Picture 1 (cartoon, rainbow, N blue to C red):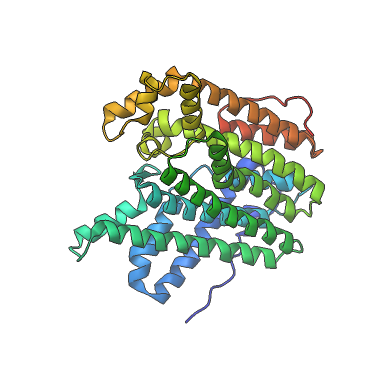
Picture 2 (picture 1 turned 135 degrees about the horizontal axis):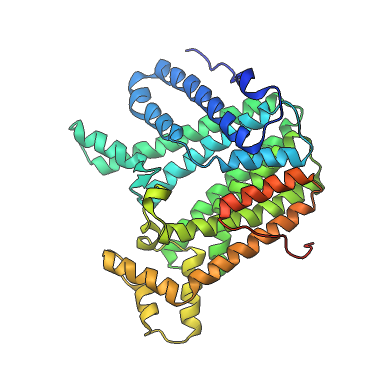
Length: 380
């Protein structure tokens, strides 16, 4: 059986003038396309049915894009640590992050029973429809779920392969791998806490923040910043400042995502605007709303009744949206997003990065959170 050739980015994409953050996200698309091409050729050599029905569909989902935020933050971390010149290792690390994100999306959609992803049927839905259309035996839903779990595992394997290749080719590979290893465990911990909170019907605000931090904030911003900085040989002081900045920015990003998950336009977000509510996912937004109704000590209030209701009907979902507004929960979450973004910028100031890099980080935070923040008073 043929082995996998190493992934080498096209020199025309990565050499020459230093990349900007937008340039890095463009370059990662080219590298990701090359990686997927190599992986699909290998999949076809392994088994044509597996390649056609699973690997090809996974690659198509990857190529439908995404924000590429993790790549942009990895590039920013690299620059903050003094990285310049050849950014090929940063871009390959970004491509690995995109594949890891693909794994998380596929598995998350299965666990949340989401129907849409990136403006098209979620992968488990597409696979279930394939089962039904082909007249296969057994449950189409069970087949789609099981096959999507395998697809997510395949994306993780592809991500690990690419990160390992990159780590072996750089003098800073050990630190790079340490950050990657920590990030993978944090992601799984966050997903489990998310499931656990739904099963226990938790409404605890601190638990909601812990889930958002583990499940999203660390691997969306904090770890990508540290991965990029590791490639430039950053010391622990700089890495600590970047992780702190990234955790705050990443948490603000997740709180924005929670708001969009309830009030967003599916045609813009590419996913439904009621999945979190129907599954009673413990978001910070929901936890704050429940806390406010409890503080009012009126469990018969219209808001509390709406928040505790069965959400199978669209009317019930609309009542919850109204309750989130009426209690003031949405306004408080918006204020928290702005606060976290400001604290994040203050932590980034501690890195001593050049002005251009600080501006790059500020622009990325604004893109991730939807708010234009200013650094708060000096943080420790």
